[in-house]
Length: 147
Image (cartoon, rainbow, N blue to C red):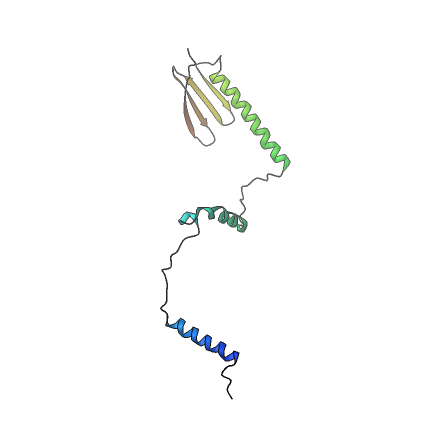
């Protein structure tokens, strides 16, 4: 028994017709183009911050030489050491470049030796470290302020 005007058969006819039309069309395609994600390799530069955040969130590496910044006594010790070295650097600068500076001299503290010689246009500083034997020479020009 057949039902030619049934809505179910009418939908199947439309589906078959659509499939025949679709398969008869030629395929349309384009080339696949690879674009890197990482900006270091030519990707979008706006991806950099997000990629770095993801990498930092996934890392499990802990620096074995890192100092504990939350320890108050260690932080106080670092601050005190920094202040003492800053004061010492200020005093050495006054000895070498101050109003009553001598023509040459030698300053020793710890394993460090700083020798200086004043010339007409510059001061030559030689910094020696007895612990590792390194020597650094710095030539500082003397600035004359309107004399």
